[in-house]
Length: 161
Image (spheres, one colour):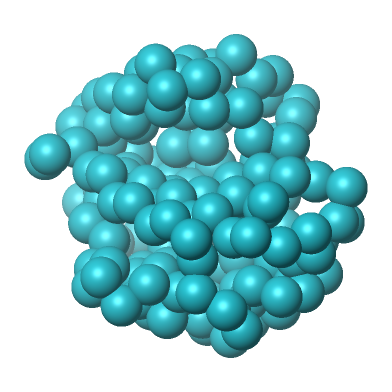
């Protein structure tokens, strides 16, 4: 069984037009969203083997806040440039190349590609609002199979729920 969790970054600031897109920080609401979603995952005893984040500040901060709630160290978060300004197909390529020893991978990134990938994996998921968490379980032993077969379970949670 392989578990894939996609986390769209929490609410970020658009207030400073001089900031590069990668440098946009979370607003207070976003920090609270990330902490709340991390708490929900911790209650479910979610323990990913891999936390992989976009290098964008808003995604990395979301990953750090959620990791803290999950009992993971900040140093355990790997940053991968391929999760920034990607595509659903590009994300799928990253996932399919994961080490098969990993059972649960949690990725932190952006829309529209996260919503597109989530919808591709499960037609029931149409969109991922800020700080949404989509979790998919696949009856397979290899990551390379993801996207070729439907997940045995798919859930979506977000702060407004």
